[in-house]
Length: 149
Image (cartoon, rainbow, N blue to C red):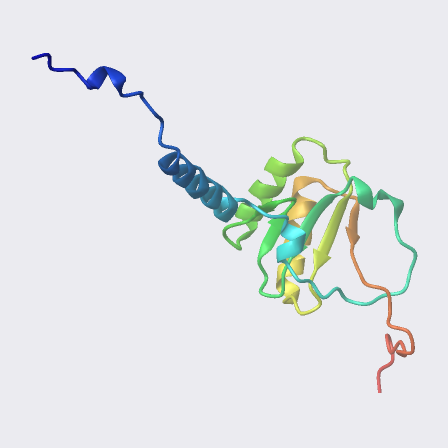
């Protein structure tokens, strides 16, 4: 009697279900850890002012200060709120170009000391072209700037 070997008839196959599971987990990991644009995360309420917009804002270095007094330079967050950390981050982002314009975007509810710290850091680093971002005044609102009673 002849015994037939069935192992030779088995064809190798690749099971795709574990591969698809691994790919889905990698996609979820990358979506969760992706960095997003700082402007979409920060909700700033800019102070209101009248005036003409400057044309240098497109290539300016952006420094953001949120309502809690936290600093963001370009797309990087300054981890500590002291002057030296802010200066280090500004120097790293700006490089050696001290003639570059700087746009300061501070929330209207930002503590004044946080804004002064940014001006101090920029001045110590040698930046001289500093702009402050403001929102246009609301129509119908009276400007009460400078009136003291």
